Image (cartoon, rainbow, N blue to C red; front, side, top):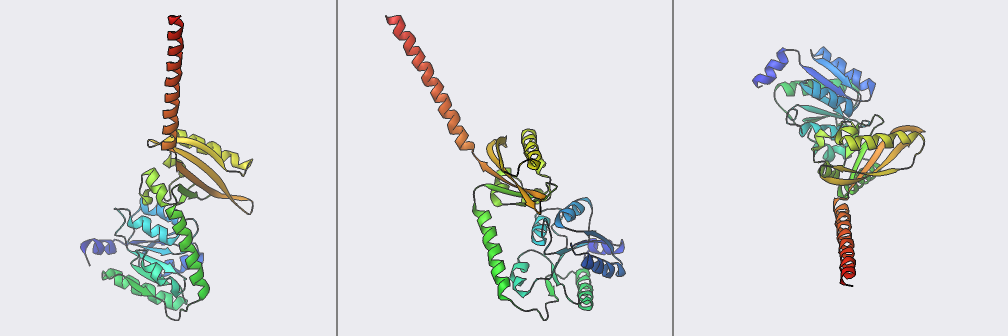
Length: 296
C-alpha cells in the first residue's frame, strides 16, 4: 500500500455510492459504514459528478443502469479527468453475463454483480480488502448467472444506436429536465471544442455565449405553448451554427431536450462571398451607366 492510500485509511476515508435503487444504496452504505468508512450517496450520474468535483473520495461504487447519466458514461468522465482518473471505481450491475465483455471495457477497477445479500456483503468486503492491498480488476458475484438471447439482441440495438450517433456530422446533445447535459456525440465534442468530461453534467447554457444562451432560453420558454422544434442560428467559437431544439415529453411532462447543432460556417461564408460579389457587380454596373452618360 502506498503512503497516500495509508494516510487516507487513517483519516476515515469517504466512499461515494451512486445508485438510483434505494435498497442497494442503503445496503452498501450499511456494509461500508460497519467497516469504518464515511459514506455519501447520489441517485444518478449527474449528482455523482457534482459530488466528485467538490470532494475527495477513497472509492466510488457506481451502478451501471441509472437515469440521466449511466455508469459507463460516468466512469468515462472520471477517467478523462486528470484529477480524478486514479480514483478506484467499483461498477455494480444486475446485468447478465452477456454484459461482461462490455463491462470490462469501461475502465472500472472492480465489477460487483448484485445478488443475494450475504453474497453481496462478502464480495464488498473482499473488494475493500483488495483495495487496501492495491489489487484491482476483479469480477465478483457472477456465480449462477446465465445467458438469454434477448439480451444479446438488446445489446446489438444499443450498439447500433450509439454507432449511428457517433458517425453523423451534426452535434447531438440530450439534456434532462433541468437542462443538464446527459449525452453528447463525437461531432458535438469537436464543434464545442471541449473534452466530454467537461461537458457531461454541465448546464446547457454554459456551452454557449450570451447570444446563444438568450436564444436557447427563448426557445425553451416556447415549449409550454408549442411542442414543435425551433430553429435559429448563432455564432460560437468562430463557427456559424444552425441550432434545432426539440422538446422531450413523456406522460405529458417535460423531461429534457434534444439539441442538434449543424456547422454552417462554410455555407454562410459562401453567402457572404456571393453577397459581396453581387454588391461589386452592382457598383460596376452603376459605374458603367455613369460612364455611358458622360460619353453622350
